[in-house]
Figure 1 (cartoon, rainbow, N blue to C red):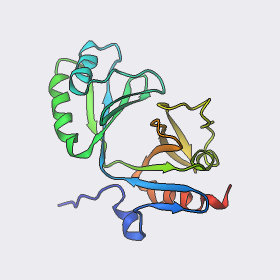
Figure 2: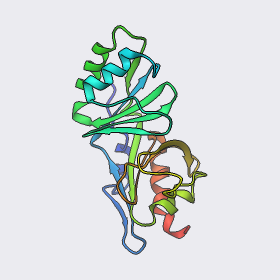
Figure 3: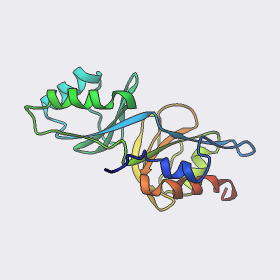
Figure 4: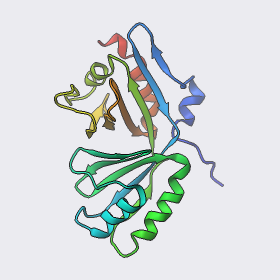
Length: 193
């Protein structure tokens, strides 16, 4: 029988990963382990999909590179026919089951990908500059406003980056197999800027 391991288990065994805090630089990196992720796939024109999302979590299907946040739920645009639903980890199975039932008459699909991605909150005054040293996106407020989401590469790692609207905070998801590399890159970041 296979043993279940959370995305950051291997990383936490290697070193303390509760929080990376560089007091001199003001950078703070916190692994996020209490959130679940559901990948929703379908057509944004599908009335059944829009109704299911609205009734289940009160959200609207967001347009390109935007999010719709409703309480503890955030629906993030990924592609023209894919969205990530971030929600409390304890509710993932129940919400997935309810959405599957609501979406039965449509061609939409829902997949729990909570274990596939490692999640980090990167905050503090230098967060934007640190992330921009490793990616090609302009993360300054005029170009990447609150609520924006994008796929990019950060430190040569495919990542999803979201600005949830809290000052100087970015949330990043990376494939679990790159979590240690990403963590080490962030830990070494004050030396680069």
